Image 1: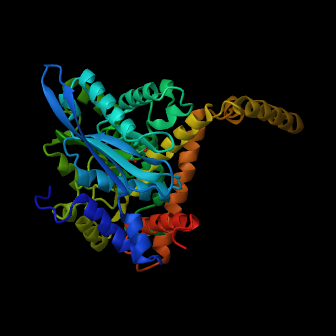
Image 2 (image 1 turned 120 degrees about the vertical axis):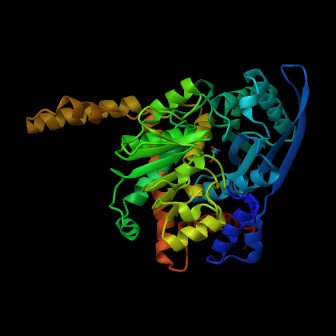
Length: 473
Ligand code: GLU
């Protein structure tokens, strides 16, 4: 890890923004407005711990941009939380939403705690109090600002948030849309949990299907047979590893904060997850070699490296030792600007976070739409499609005199369920975003990397929406 950090995280986001802004036609004032963090809310509140002591919490919610409403972004529980980090992550949300055409402004929240050191009861108190602080200042609501899970939070915390919000705002008919990433029973949508990992997979798969890009990297097209290393076995890393494995890639390395494991024959994420649950560590997994330091996994020889944990893990110190051909940024901000420069020189393709991990917010958008429409996806059309498919099939069989095999029949007849529609909407979104960014990158030789191309796409979209509002004629 880098001891000296030349830029703060927010500054490094600004630096990447400025690098890209040169390739756009927008006036400096427009660019300054897009870059600025509009609202920063820092709060302090006391919590009584289980042992009776009082602890003062440090928490934030940052709304980076309101060029579209509501604002959107996760809430993280981590000891590293600070204002600069939340601002940087909120800014990334603005750009991320713009790239994938999700009509939200960017936001982010954080509470400076290590959730492992608190009981479930304490975490519930903290989450509920944080929510009521947001309600007091009008920083949450289906039309204002909609949080979601992030590092250290999940469905459970989102359920506490929606429950607190709805008890403070009784009768608000769209109240369930005040937060996304909720359990299905509390207004969540099927497919949200795996969304970020699946989006990472769809994005990298699309890159791997581009002959021109693969030729430059000296790789053959397709995901099958590619070797993959994943750092972080949380929700995002777990699902990314799962989808790569299911599509024929070989996950040769997995890392968690206590260390990493390596097996060139391939690792099964669920087995490793269960092993970690029972032994308390990823290490000593049967058949795999231990790597004592988790960051060593970043330097393993592989085709695709997926940092899926925290920011700044690949920096000026270790980027030179990375041996992967493609880096897929599943986490937010895992590579620093210094690392980016090194990858450009070394011809390593870094697929940037702010679009690659946009699967989470894309499906959050679907969840929010579901909450506003008060109906499950597929409820109206599933049976209709199945009946229609059955009639078409019957006609075809009658006219051709042939019978379709049973397995095919089930596939053809199947009417789309909620999860099918969510996965399909996500696939469409990630494929389109990948193609748009690649088009920007490959059609302007001066644009040095894919991150810059992604920023160009984001800047153009946000600036256009300001122009549409008549703010920047
Ligand atoms: N925390 C996720 C992210 O950083 C999801 C945000 C959301 O769904 O609003 O993209």
